[in-house]
Amino acid sequence: SQGPNDGELTFVSGSPGKTDRLLTLDELADTRDRFLPYLLRMFNRREVLEIAYSGRSFENARRARDDLFGDQNNRKRYDGYLAGLLDPQIWSLLQAREQKLRDAVTNDPKLSSAGAAYDRTKTAQAEIAKNAPLYNYLEQERPISIGYRGPRAFSGNLFKYARLLLRAADERAKPNGERIPQFRDSARDSLELELFSTEPIYDDYEILRLTDSLTDFVSQFGANDPLVQKVLAGKSPHARAVELVTGTKLKDVTVRKDLYHKDAAVLQAAHDPMIELARLADGPARDARKIYDAQEEMKKQAYSEIAKARFAIEGTGSYPDATFTLRLSYGTVRGYEQDGKQIPAFSDFAGLY
Image 1 (cartoon, one colour):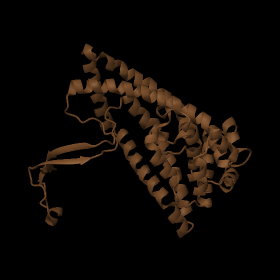
Image 2: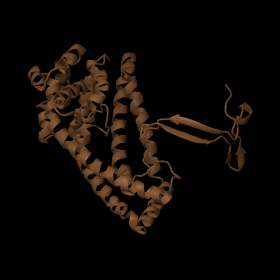
Image 3: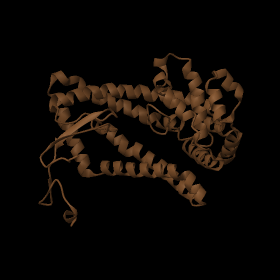
Image 4: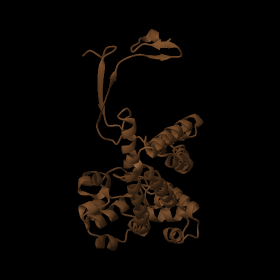
């Protein structure tokens, strides 16, 4: 088939992941000053741990390869995000853009609700920041609506299986619409695919990751925190991790399949140490999730008002945010100018030099 020609109209379909064009300066400041530094500390810590583990043998390097690649990729990604928000020129542009929009909202009585929406996002974001330590360490290390993302305090696949089993039993007793999204009927296939994975479990690697995350948990909340003391059960983070990993039966996929179809009473009677740990953390984790979800809903409604105002003022000249949904982009094939030189739309090897 023949490719496009210079000046030809082209269409490209795709499902872009996520953009945040509507974020207010208050939320961007929180992202810059709190959230991104938190993520970078987490991924840097994991990267160091995985590199050290990988350096001990070829087999260790193979086991940690995917985790290391993912953590390094995230560290680089968030490094770039932070660099952008720390760039004074970019920040000035963001300030000017928001001020222009807010001035236009102030001068248009029909858009007055958008002015109050900025205050609501600021209030909600402050509550999210206040709740963040409990949410990040007990519920999930960073927000995701569908799928599993583990709490920062409890790294590893075995705790993941324990939480999924515990919550699957609890959530099944609720009407479908009231369940956590991950446990609704529409997500059942994904849940079971994750829970019944035949991915091998390596005790030494699980112990290493859980020891480090428990140590991190103690560092965040202090050794005298009541929940920390319950989690550690009078042991060091390493001794507790060894006890949990060697004592659980959840390494066996047949055990997980059997427990998955049982109710909460059977799970409790199983006395599996990893499930007991998941149960211990579940109450405060759910409390933190409720706070986060309530504030996110407040922000969602506020941003809807801001978006309406933006498109009323600016028209359709700018794209809406990406949401992992199908989009059709279009444009004309053409060259561009760089450093005063016209770069053609197509080139060859000679054009490299």
